[in-house]
Length: 83
Image 1 (cartoon, rainbow, N blue to C red):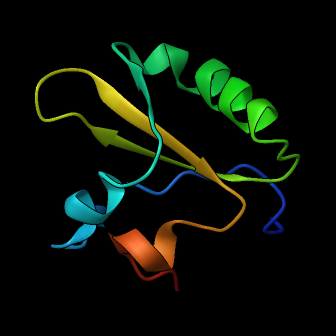
Image 2 (cartoon, helix red, strand yellow; image 1 turned 180 degrees about the horizontal axis):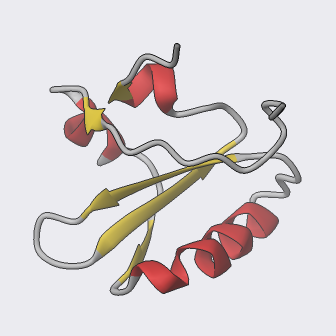
Image 3 (cartoon, rainbow, N blue to C red; image 1 turned 60 degrees about the vertical axis):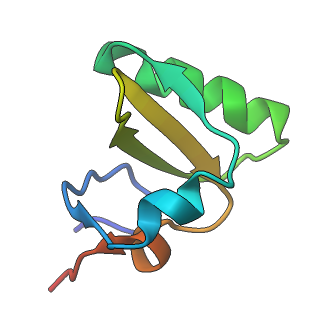
């Protein structure tokens, strides 16, 4: 059985207003998805977060934007329902 404290990945759609709201947050940019976890860990360390959520979205020009926050991004920015 998996607890919420273990890594799990959701592939979901963003809410309609998510991109405009995310534009107000600090993000790291990566060109390759292989770099997401390294960049997320660095961003979390800079923000002094030891427990954090990660949101990765495709950048509209190229690559990907990586967001980290103490709170889960799921309810605030995505259209997802876990059952």
